Image (cartoon, rainbow, N blue to C red; front, side):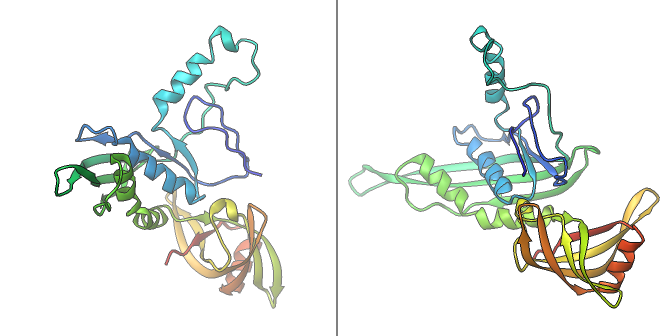
Length: 272
């Protein structure tokens, strides 16, 4: 069972050693505007990324607040406590999502008598994905909310505006970070062809029944992975949190041959 105890470098993290999900960090957003609601955009991105269940998420947006708590736990009040958080143990992010708030517009709406009837809001921001090891920017995209409906408060208006991007952000994350898992066991064979396999990815990876995966053989050429498509799988049932049973819909003989030879195989979720 996966156990994730923390959100940023400097706080103890425990997770299953078998968990091979990508570690994705979300950095504190920079901003061109001085708005008390600027952090709400980063919080929305953290929420969307976390709810995909595809990654171990490292939240850097709350670094200052958590650091203050860690320092407070060093005081005398916690000397005999067993509830202090272990420090200096971290999970390093492999990819970092870096955001920049371009605009945050909040409109005060008035009624015919001149009184305030409510608020509307809209926002625009950019997201970049950095490869932490190389420092290279792998993706960059701009986002613009629709104008929120009339809301009772400024905060509600901002949240409603950001909610208009939920589906767009989910699609962006799915496209930018495709889910990749391994075949861990062949469950059924027929005439030297794999017909049913078990993959090392289930609910924990956001995989569900009916999903399709592309199967690729990975060859290393000049130190770089070179994938060749050899088949496809269809998820027929989830087996606990970390596994799923799949029907081989294409390339059963090639899959069986590659596995028998001990060659590296990668299965990538097909995003429609």
